[in-house]
Each structure stands twice: as C-alpha cells, then as structure tokens.
Length: 350
Ligand code: NAD
Ligand code: TYD
Image (cartoon, rainbow, N blue to C red; front, side, top):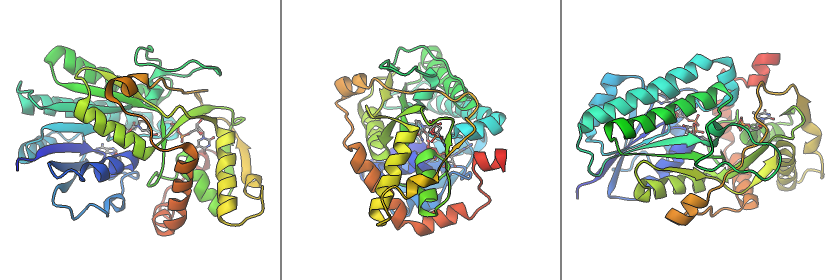
C-alpha cells in the first residue's frame, strides 16, 4: 500500500504528541515527527507509538533549510502539520527574539522548503499551519467572540509572532498557490502539558503544597479545550478542510483563572482525601503579567457546521482525566521539574 507521508513539526510537544498518537492509528499514513527537542519537546510523550512501523523521528530545527530539504526528499512528504513553535507567552516576554526566530523565520523556511519541494505539483499536497486565538487580541468581559473574520490584533511577542506566521502562510496561498489551511484554537489542557502553563503548573504545585501564583486578580478569562478534542479537530481539518480557509477551534468553555484554579484545588482535595478548602489556601496573588490579555472566547460554528466537528469531552471529565494523569505520572513530572527549568515568575521575582 502507498502510504501518505505526513510531516508533523513539533510532534514531541504537548499538542503535537497527541496529534501523532491519534494519526498513527491510521495505517495508511506514515508520520515523520520533526522536532528540535527544546525544553518543551520530550520523546517520553511518544513512548506508546515509538515502535510503530508507520512512525519516524528526526531531530531538527525548522530553521535548518538543508535538513528540511533532505527530510522532504527522503520521506516524499505530501502533507505538513506545522505545530513547532515557542508557545509560552511568559517566555516571549523574557526572550522575544527567540519567538521571532522560531515562529516567524522557522515558518517562512518551512513554507519555502515545501513550495520548492512540491515545485508546482500541488495535487494531494497540504501545508496545515496550527495557530492560536491569541492572534485576535483581547476581548472585554461580556459575550463577544472571536470569529474567523475578527481583525488581527496580537499584543504579546508570542501572539505577534504567530500572527506573522499566519500572514506568511496566507501569502504563500495567494502568491504561489500553495495549498494551505490554518486553524486558530483556544487554550488547551490535558496530559503531557509542560508544567509552566497554568493548569499543569497548578496541579504540580497543589500536589507539592507549593504556592499557586495567580497573576493580578485572577479575573482574566480563557476558553479551555481538552487536547484530545483539539487533535481530533486537526485531523478533521487535515482530511476535509477547504484549501485557503481558516477554522477557529474552541470549547465554549470560559473560566476566569481564579475559578479554574479553585476547581483544580477542589478536584485534588477530593482525590487525595484532603480537607475541603485545604489546597485553596495555596492561592497566592502575584504581580500581573505585562500586557495580560483580558479575555479570549471563540465562535467555533464554522468547523462545527462545515466539517461536523464538536468537542467530545465535558470540562469536568477532561479535568478529572488530566488530574488523574498527573497523579499517575510522578516520574514524568519529576524528570521535567528536576531540570534547570524555572517558571517565569521565579525568574522575574526570585
Ligand atoms: P509545546 O511548547 O508543548 O511544544 C512545542 C514543540 O515544538 C516542542 O516539542 C519543541 O521541541 C518544538 N520546537 C520548538 N522550536 C522548534 C524548532 N525551532 N524546530 C523544531 N521544533 C521546535 O507547544 P504546544 O502547546 O504543543 O503547541 C503546539 C502548537 O499549537 C504551537 O504552534 C502553538 O502556537 C499552538 N497552539 C497551542 C495552544 C495551547 O494551548 N497550548 C493553543 C492554540 C495553539
Ligand atoms: P497560560 O497557561 O500561560 O496560557 P496563555 O497565556 O497562553 O493563555 O496562562 C493562562 C492564564 O493563566 C493567563 O491568563 C495567565 C494566567 N496565569 C497565572 O495567573 N499564573 C501562572 O502562573 C500562569 C503560568 C498563568
């Protein structure tokens, strides 16, 4: 059987590894995971699939043109799912140029290698760029939603670098006819997320009786989607998305940061038979993030109506699965947190 060869960049990260775990279930596909293994990339995330015959790994940087050209040729790549990125807003405040390099220049390099390799033969080819709702900026409290036609208004170096990469992808569609598709998703949570992002950071700190740093008043709102639902949306768009189109992906699931952290505290108190309210005592209000976006919320009707996707995990179920996973994965957490890794807050304020 002639397999379809798919290059997944950033496949050793949180979302990329879930996409790969789902993709390799289809024996008609061969998945090449291309990842630099930065602090956020962890091959332990792929232990369950690493021996599968339709999976390969290449360690590399998306800024490395020669290596990418070699991989496209050797594996005869037909489709790209581009997830590799620097993904944490706090780090983008500390190191903005790294975000420009990876997210903007890396994406430009990957686009150019795909265009050169396919050389005008675009039949059954696809460049699928994974992006974020943060490109649309910040909403006020209320009921407004980001839709696919909301003007871009990125406000952090992270979201600006992702916005720039989205523009580059669209420019290759309009200028060179490269078959592209883009999706912009809200905040993900679930197993294998690096414990610098709010949910795994708080789970880890609750388990270790450490302070739970809440930026500002904890009133900022995010829409949360279970990572398995995002990966499923990505595969739906890979198979059926319209070339040149953008799809917003979200969970219709808005929580303020304070509400969310309290849910985590209650869930873990219950699991560990702690006294009710014990973990909430760890909540600590700290200096706000610079340029902290107030609210993100998504209108996901296009992907629901056009492609028939909808989230399968209720929030309560997703949070329980996530907490259970982190409770079971003491070793995974230990391997990560024992490294030189420090949170943004620790770096800034000691
Ligand atoms: P992550 O930080 O967990 O993983 C990023 C992966 O990219 C890591 O494996 C890392 O090693 C790799 N990488 C980084 N720089 C690279 C380079 N120069 N070359 C090759 N590989 C490199 O990120 P994630 O949360 O899984 O996010 C994946 C993608 O989804 C990103 O593009 C992000 O912008 C987007 N996204 C994330 C969320 C979210 O809530 N996490 C929401 C919407 C969109
Ligand atoms: P994060 O997980 O970093 O995702 P993003 O900034 O991409 O939305 O943060 C989610 C929200 O939680 C955001 O409003 C910032 C806030 N936050 C805290 O209050 N404390 C923390 O320690 C972290 C990491 C985030």
